[in-house]
Length: 513
Image 1 (cartoon, rainbow, N blue to C red):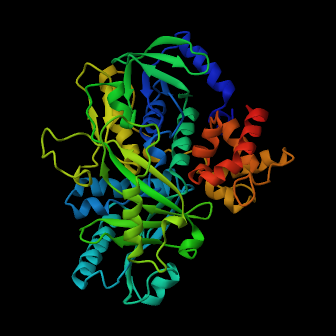
Image 2: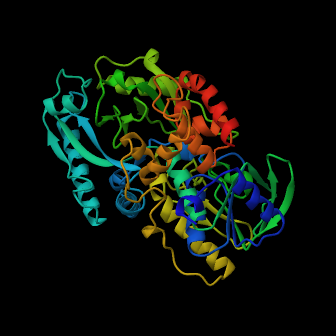
Image 3: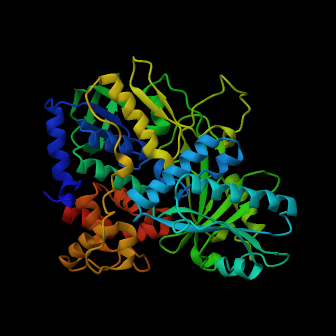
């Protein structure tokens, strides 16, 4: 069986594997949650030979994993706050992603800090020192300058060439550093999950888990309503911000990060990230990031939230105003609320540490280090962390699962396992497809050739083809219009675009499910 077929997530495979599970097929590790953490755990466990099942009530990347800045960070922020271990771990994991496991999904991105009058010379010195420390961090992680160049100072004209809308009055140059940028965070999750499937994991979306304990869960198929209690060697709770609903003993302190979406023309077609210091803050910035589909993302906030966890968090008016105000200090003309074509917000699943620290501690100051919670009684819990270090989080979680089950398996292998699509490009295909699918671009192109409208855009002005939606249904586990438009593609980040693409998505589901 080819790797593409083995990694294929479609309706037939879901029905077949769900039936086997409900009939009592043995399970070593049951993972609850289909975000980047759960997908990473499924890949790690399956690649060690463990019989692995992942379930999610909704879809892959339904929660926080699709609401990030789409950056693969090297940990500079954590270095600035003294968290050297987290910073180094982030830099190492960034290098693994960019050079070994997912080079097809990540590109290097220059980030430019414009030296405007609001940035004092002493502040500029601090930022420059931070960038130099980031260079040391990159080298210590073993990432070469061919992957991520050294930081440097640049002149005012060079700043304007990278970011045409930068405020020119008083601009005395800029500071440039490099980081990694994902083509899309949800696509990374889907790709990790498919790689887990390639190694034998069952990836079952639309399956809810309830009454979860250490070695079992009541699973309910959302399509049929059928429920059964499934037993496993151990259950791992990777439900992110909903982890406390799976295991009430877990207390989280979610933090909302909000982004605004603009048409790229609002920022003059910039080619680099614009990094803007937040007035009155140290080591905090707002970013304007060039993004696919002719967009720019501006973010992000860090606001503590309380109360019920929504399926889809929403940006508040205050957050929108805050982001516009900060961007307005560096961009001319300053964008207004009328330029905003969409917003998105996600909740970071931060471990509640208020029992050990002041309740007034800002969520921006709460450690992003992940935690593996295992008292030997309930399910193993995985909380905290961040997208860049998902692989390391998964490794620690599976180590705990192996210790709990005492199964005779080897150590983690995922640092050297290329994700689906990371292989060489065997034949000429459009670069736009290569950027999104890597070596699997040929599969998308071949599928397009079998369809009368395969290469046609899903709607005028949207650079996603009908064949890409069909590929998402046939290979990537998409089951609904929302799966197609909000996660397999990010068309849904702009509501007007989503409305125009609904008909194409509905038709593709009817023809290819």
